[in-house]
Every structure is written in structure tokens, then in C-alpha cells.
Image (cartoon, rainbow, N blue to C red):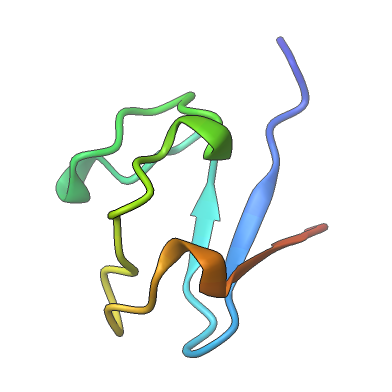
Length: 57
């Protein structure tokens, strides 16, 4: 398995984990961040994708 990455919303702190995806928000598990649509927004605060930063957990 590849190393999945985690991305954190800089506005509210919500975490997107590539391995888990966000199935309740239209993103399947194992979806790399690069494949998340540009118009996707944070499920918690509606921040844009550009407001996320990769973090190590």
C-alpha cells in the first residue's frame, strides 16, 4: 500500500485522510488529494481546497 497523506483545513482543523476519503461528502476512500475536485469544500466550514495543508499525523 502506498503512504496515504493527511490534509488539514487551516480554517477549522478538519482532517482529510487519503486512506479514509470522505465518503459522506462524495470522496471515495483511497482518493489522493490531487484527485479531489477543485470545487470541493470542507464539510465542516466550507473552506476551499486551497485552504488545506498537508500535515503529518
